[in-house]
Image (cartoon, rainbow, N blue to C red; front, side, top):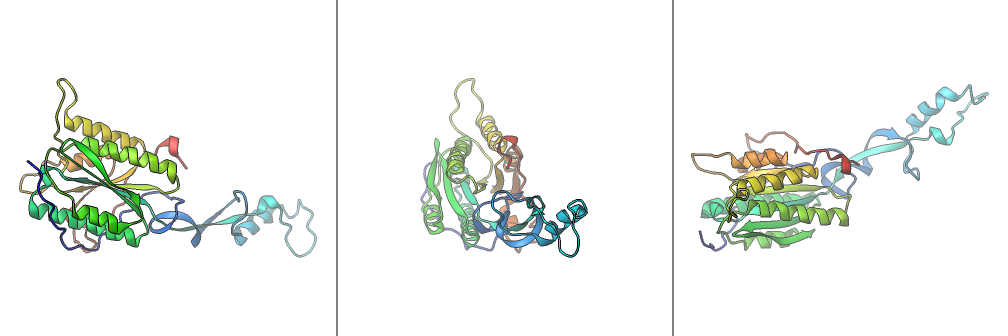
Length: 288
């Protein structure tokens, strides 16, 4: 269908926390697990460069077996540089939460789009509280648009979301490829900040097709597998509604090797909310 005017967002709600799996080393925040200069001590390791914080008991255990060989006579402990262990501490980091929002005609029903905007607004508020950076990509018609480059200004993201019109075809592949491009640039700019991709869609893919070329669904699947190969943690918010469900958003999540959630499952107080981590693909080229 043609373009439709923007509709307002439904009332925001408290969302469940969506984590990036593994252990990061990004800026302090309140989302995903990360090594930190502060936080609880979880272990010890040999210092990497300057000793940050001495782990006393681990240092004693490392030095103790060598006291006789070192000729210790009397009280005290002979400690050498190789015995030193530093504390490994774990806290939380902020992430880059990149939203890819389907604004095509298949999402255009007034009540449906209002609920979708309410869910994204809720996730934006959650990102603000967890000290994340956020970015917003929308796709409809013939292409995808970077509506908001990654920023710490959640207010700006919410304003762009509020003005978002809907209509036209569903270039899902273009949205995913635009996300990959944005994440590539941000990885160079801030390599320690791990991304979380949040795709908000019903999973449909419709666009002009060249004769003999891949279908829109095939192109979207290929783009999703490229993101999975990059090791990007992802969530697909399944916006499909109605009595007949095609399961396309779930299939997209499988291609991304991510986690599908429904709008209801996003609610922290929902009885259907599942306690499950976002799955990701380990990429040996980017292993920390």
